[in-house]
Image (cartoon, rainbow, N blue to C red; front, side, top):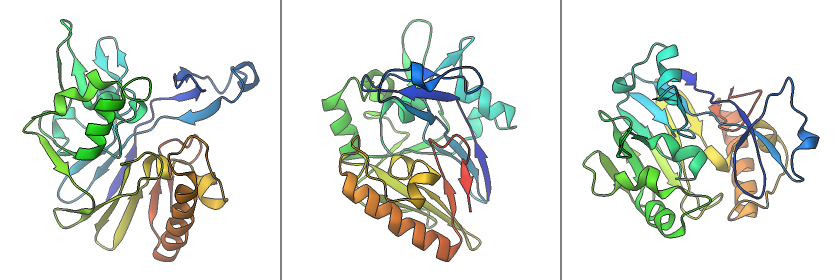
Length: 244
């Protein structure tokens, strides 16, 4: 399998839940509001024998009228129309902004029309009910009654090689993915396992729905992953997007 990080850049986020671009070579974290966290926003493309997968869809920013995630894919030699499956961990705005594309008259359509989107149904319902600032419902409302969406309930397997597990750790219906092919395992924990340093240390975040459960799951995954030689994908890690 081939792993392609699709970094959208480095940002700070504080209690306002607004992602503000941060230049690591010029900006000073101490000048940002107290409690600001420094994070990367980094979807992943994974190429398997069966599919070209997209794992989460980023912030959904446009550059010169085109989605940034399109430009990042094309720069890696992949056309957006080639994506066959979009695996969504959850629908927070930094993970789900690129689900859809808004045209110049304000109409939203799925950004990857040839792909099947895999979304937990309860996550969608919760996100629609909760709304701003964590969820930007306009960006993913087009999932509703869309034939390109495969609604998931609890845990299961997609095409006999992608396992999805709902955790309820970072958010109530957050899910993680394990992709297994040719004796390789890729693990995508999204915001349950966002950075390498959180895997190596006992870390409990106040911003998690169930911080204790998230911490315990990271310890469990870290031990199992090291024993089984997993590839970890870290969505919010500036220095280490992929770790084996």
